[in-house]
Length: 325
Image (cartoon, rainbow, N blue to C red; front, side, top):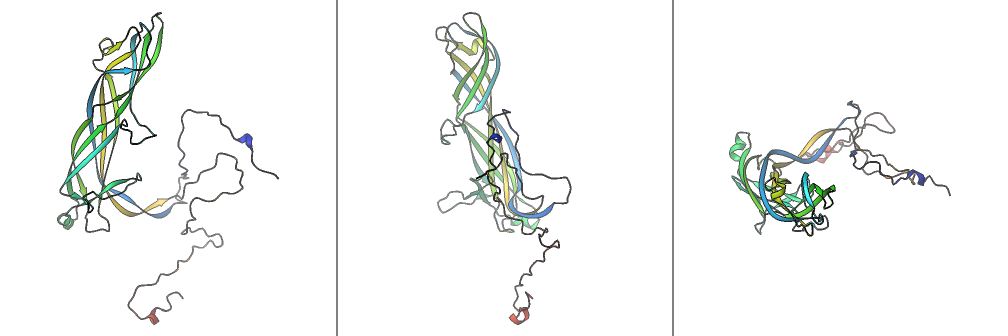
């Protein structure tokens, strides 16, 4: 029994530390294969971006590893800060999270019978969008959107990872570079901002507008007084390192008004990916159905004739009996 399987074609070698994404989308730069496709998606009607910042002072934070007896830090080369996240437990209280809470004026979030805001699935796949209702009749008559105002309180809590690259001199006067690391809980921070958004008519469409908000967070840190001698304490017996820091919390929050719409877009077709390994099978199934409105017919080059659709009418059946002839 023969096989096309070639084990020598499989390699476990890693040539690069990083990688580039492959979308599978290709375009030759011409409109030859471009077609019009209808898609049902979400449109951004209005959006606003807010940048927030806060400070957290932490003192006497222990860093690892210990530097050894009578060691001292000569110079700080770099200080890095990143958020902590435990992929094994999304509810880990140490995870650094941003919890926004928004209250509207001039409009309101639609609620259920228990008083909870009604949420729908957003583009992130979670129930992350709230439905908004407001009396838009006045601005509807002028053909414009209706403004709503909001107050957003952003709560930040969790831990950050701080790494410090330092030049250390040992007791034997040898110098080496050491990376000190600590998992640091920050002081909970609460920030407030105000915004205005424009919503479309709630009476002129099949869907109410939706409100989406999302935030991202990063951190920056430095020595509390920018002094190695004042901010860093090293135990001369054990080499234990304790440091005073100032941590800046930098937050970007975006709020959007979303409206479900059907759009006509120009498309070059479905993405097509090429396998990177010599296959054992001779054929593989398709992941997407064939385009039914494709003008390329395997048996006939002429465009297919669409089947006429019956008209809804109050006329007698006899008058419409030849509709499919």
